[in-house]
Length: 282
Ligand SMILES: Nc1ncnc2c1ncn2[C@@H]1O[C@H](COP(=O)(O)OP(=O)(O)OP(=O)(O)O)[C@@H](O)[C@H]1O
Ligand SMILES: [Mg+2]
Image 1 (cartoon, helix red, strand yellow):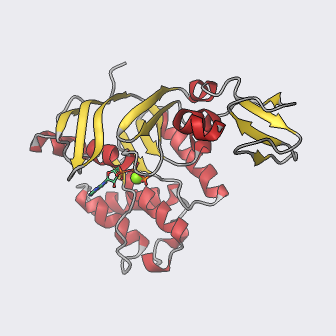
Image 2 (cartoon, helix red, strand yellow; image 1 turned 180 degrees about the vertical axis):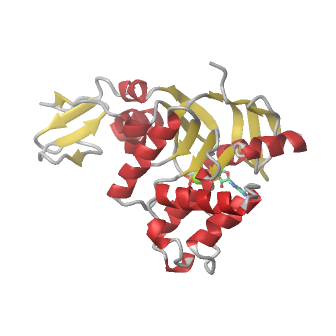
């Protein structure tokens, strides 16, 4: 299958700081999760992919189009839904007005069709009954859902979401997962998250970044498998870093503590070992 989105040897610096270095990736249909510690370069990569930031070097192609070219960039944007990490606030707009404003920018020109589309995306994020509430009167999680609603306008072929699940309560996270797995069946969805559970429950592929580079690319199962034979459960606290499990045992990663039994590796274990194996295992 032709990938929707490819980047090749991407580099982006901010002053002397390198935010991306030699990143090459391809994204096709389905949901891909982007994991990585704070400052890894996730938002920088996402902004380049969403055509809001130009790279210093490297190539980007979305739908075979080049965002460095103004006309082609416009054509990409017409097929793109984007949720930035810090969406603008517009506190005096109502929820409806805010989404409609973006719908106008997205050139949904017919007033009736536009209003129907605004109502549709507000319903998708369960904000139908808050359409006429001012943004400043919405809760943090509701604002996050409103920002997601505007990304869904026009049913884009490519959805790029920077930490979309931040601040969502469990019920809304579940709705979000249902929505994205439905969309991912026929579209390309890329989301960044710090919740390894989002990756486990939602993503077909996962990319892990660290200090501006890609350190892992594969399925969630393959990421979990990075921790195979390195997850241990004990009944007394082991040395080093450990955490208590709900059943009262202690869980640790890395070397086998005395009298430990093996635990089932998950995505989070694979991620932790991949990034900080030594510290976690110390
Ligand atoms: N506009 C900017 N000006 C200067 N430096 C920046 C800018 N944006 C990002 N950086 C730097 O680039 C690096 C990568 O930042 P980025 O925002 O891409 O990380 P991230 O993986 O999204 O982190 P987080 O998980 O905290 O959102 C960091 O060192 C950051 O300080
Ligand atoms: Mg970020």
